Image (cartoon, rainbow, N blue to C red; front, side):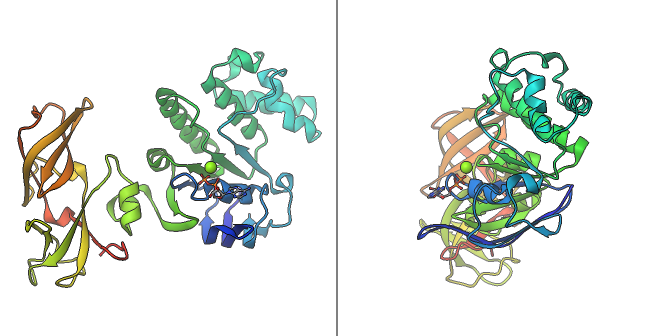
Length: 357
Ligand code: ADP
Ligand code: MG
């Protein structure tokens, strides 16, 4: 196992800068998720760690050693991609052992390591099959097996689950987490799916346009997003964001919305009177029975049952808000809906900079 350190990493393709001065320390055995919208530079960053992409500026260290000049093989990393790239003419066992064979390991060692990985990933019964005889999920598991047998210092994952259907994705997600809990290999996992990032990782790094917006534990990012980008990106359904201006005095500050409605905010927010702000309300914090002290009432526009919960989209002060209520609660369409939020749960951002206040 090994730590991974990125020191002031930048990457340009010609004049196009895609990664801008990223520094990141991944601890030995840690599971890190890099999450961000498509095109923000996740794969580029991962490929630089793997040695598949040249680094324009900065240093990458694995296990404390600078690896900038090393080939992918010398870095002792294993990468799992979205496409499994299994050899169609080889069996599962042969696919899993192929890299070990190339590295000159004996037949006994290969058989033993493949058996061990197969046990870990529940592939024992499939070892003699060809890839064409496997389901998508099984193929992805073989691709992971191929990475595991090499006993690498670091696992790199690039959206390994995006080709799978929703149910299988959730199942494989649990398997990857279980696998990490068993082997504890340092892992860097790239995804555009914030739920995947949150559920898997010890620490989540949010990327946007080649820069780190925030890094922290999943709960940190959810509870205290550093800025509007992270606030809007983390959480599902997404946080409600409404523009307002700071009003009220001293112990009773409020956000005055466009139509004049006042929304009380915590006195701990560092705001000044007249400041343009955006307030953020998590849908799951807007409840009709939770005893909040900021009333929000309006007509329902859309009612979306999901089973355990129902998403209610309703109009307040000319804004559309989403609330998450208990699935047992009957909510009619185009009817009046009364809810509330506690003022301490109202997020506040400076509108110009997007920074949390
Ligand atoms: P992500 O994986 O987050 O979707 P990528 O790392 O693939 O993003 O790409 C980041 C940016 O770099 C994108 O704007 C993409 O178009 C650009 N890019 C990636 N590879 C190349 C390349 N070989 N040449 C030029 N631009 C590239
Ligand atoms: Mg990518």
